[in-house]
Image 1: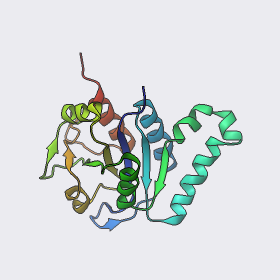
Image 2: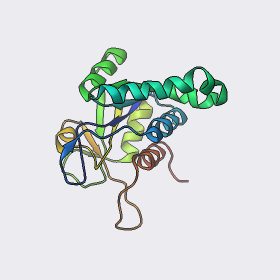
Image 3: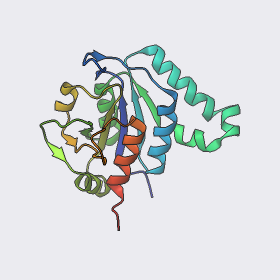
Image 4: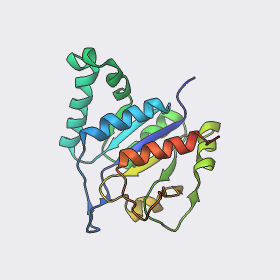
Length: 190
């Protein structure tokens, strides 16, 4: 089966910091590795790492290159296979344009947030069915730092319902949140 028509995107700007300021957050090595493995496991088309900082984009490219060729590729071929899905790009707009060119139509953008926001909420079952149906390309957008800005969320077609745990505490790492989201989209408890 070919890859599903969905993309995962990790946005590093514009996002909030803990004081509520709009910032550019730093790339982390774990996000690159773990999210690419997640997208590969759940049969996505690509993982977009979005940052306006040229030095951060270069770092991502170096990390990926290490595991796709040379010693890293022979040491752990599975890692390189997942990292083939990583695409590094400077902005959300550039990502949407690239996907539109590739797919022949603009993607449906779905924001995620741990917070409750007003907007066009979509549930996990509905989004999962939309992706599995395959009529439209879909981007599931995650934010780093303290999350996507209101402006980014308002610019998306949908906002996925927040993950609710078993306590009031609600501050998952983006890697954990993305894994929970993809599992909820595609697998229903029997």
